[in-house]
Amino acid sequence: MPYIANTQADREEMFKRIGCADFAEMWRQAQVTVPEPSLDKLPHGLSEFEVVSNLKNLAAKNASELVNFLGAGYYDHIIPAAVSEITSRTEFYTAYTPYQPEASQGTLQAIYEYQSMICRLTGMPVANASLYDGGTALFEAMMMSVRATRRRQVVISEAVSPIFRKMIECYSTNLDIELISVPAGIDDSNQQALLDAVTDATACVMVQYPNVFGTIEDWAEFTDKVHVKKAMAVCSTYPIALALLTPPGELGFDIVTGEGQSMGIPLSFGGPYLGFMSVTQKLMRKMPGRICGRALSHTTDSEGHDGFVLTLQAREQHIRRESAMSNICTNENLCALSALVYLSCIGKQGLIDVAQLCASKAVFAREQLLAIKGVEPVGGDAFFNEFVIKLPTDAGEVVGKMIDKGFAPGFPLGRYYDDRRDQLLVAVTEKRTREEIKALANALEGVLWN
Image (cartoon, rainbow, N blue to C red):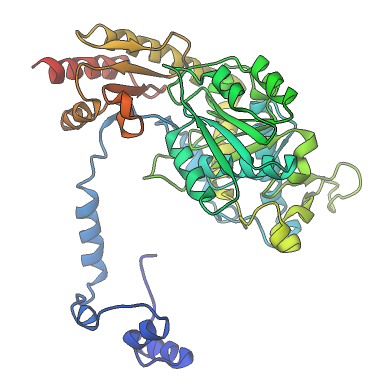
């Protein structure tokens, strides 16, 4: 918001309405403790030009031109120019599901098409109109499992994104839920240990596909065994990878969630991003968030076009209040629209091509990095576009030195895994060139041995 139109008279009127003489009295009435001297030390307001210049100078301190090999759930993909061109149109430019939905048929049709594409990607029959981000979507999947099974224990693999796990721990702090974390293997989710942790009190088992180390695992037999124990199988996934991998729905998962940032949404200091969710038909009425439906035979407009509605709203908080499926009261509609436009622009074959480029360039990058003296592989060859390498020194220190050379070389796993301080998670997308990959390897070799 570049311009605030409030005049001094406007502010005085607002203070009068709320019964305060000034800001200091407003803080006191709000019972916010602000030391009196600190109010006097607040700087005087700057002009618009000065504020913008100040912010630009601060932003310029960020290392924003790095060659990016970061991943761990958030990826630097090419975004077609049409995405921002379409989503910035005034009829679309809102984060909200319309409050008078049937009067917004264009938005509802976009939501419906987005849901349809998520279903096709995940191999599941039903998807919602989006959630906040991948971490909260996984939390909502956990809560849906608890409601559906009436059990309070949750088993989660430590091969699930540690960022997502931190979010789940935070959300669950004051809930009557027992979280059981199962340590990961060298590069896998330790499936047998996960199964051994399942008891008669377990609501669900949560895993990631591909996992946080980039490894692709076969979950078909695992989900069958989870179901035998009357628990649910929940999967967090990477949508670009699903262009090549077996869809989670065909592997027997009950709930599939993920972070949709890779579909047409830029990296932006953590958001706004996009959480997607799809479920089995059986769980449709227990799913949180909006669901857009299409009227096939009865509801049409004056030109005979099918009508779109927000359906099954008896699940939601504005009807069921505290008994709602979730207290999240909106979705990431603009981000979901970005994902829809992205997928529409590149098409089915285009998505496959993007995924194949990611996979093949990752293989090339791994070969280049493993050719460096002292760099060792971690895990096997079954990965999509991310892999782990072991360095002869602390990976966090190496990352700092590589940033000075113009590279974000990967994610130092020691930040979340104490026993992996010498390991680096490297992600490669279609955006990275062979020249950039070779330059990464040369720079890393120089940092390690010069």
